[in-house]
Length: 255
Image (cartoon, rainbow, N blue to C red; front, side, top):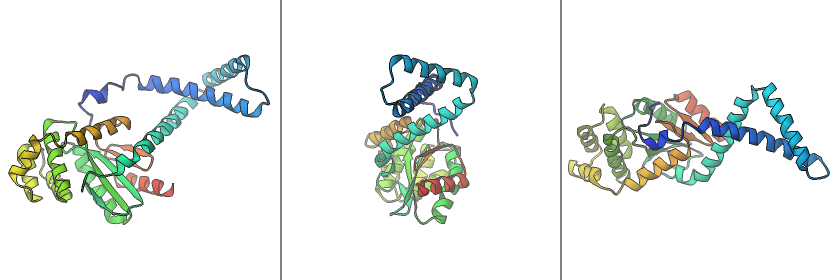
């Protein structure tokens, strides 16, 4: 998985574990208090709550192994809420920036960068997934975080999406090697987009809002790089491979 270079992706990392640990303690204490309140005929008073918190505190110190489990559960619950709140935006492609089933029962969302080698490595896994499952759709979301050339490539990609030429451009650019203005123009030509049209798209601010929206979504999902996949209520980071993608689809479909 590639590490993003944009400052907004790095800013929140230093205190995230501290915040989650605090959240876990609050979550466990609150849960214990709620459970007692449900069993008791009267509301929990201040003295009882203090006693409960002391019991929880001592139990955590005696069984510190529950902390990673609690953090994982808390993180999963928060991620599920975040995905559900953004699902409609996540799973709605920009024009033709998708492949697979039009009436899919599971949508796989990939945040990617054309300059990302791990994204390129994931291309055959996604092709295999779509080819082997007639009810899956892949929605591609541009996340050009690695270079200015990434941003240029993303803009021409969105133009290709508007022209219903998305996958032709997508595959051509990944097959061209290092991303540059020359490889972008060459890939665009293979998708039926002229050099002047590609250069106009690169210079245009038309696609900035879509790209910024994708960056905001990635931040909401705590994405740490590219590729990042969203499948159902799961977020998978990195080039996870075909089996992990297939398993993620099966889990989403089961729910």
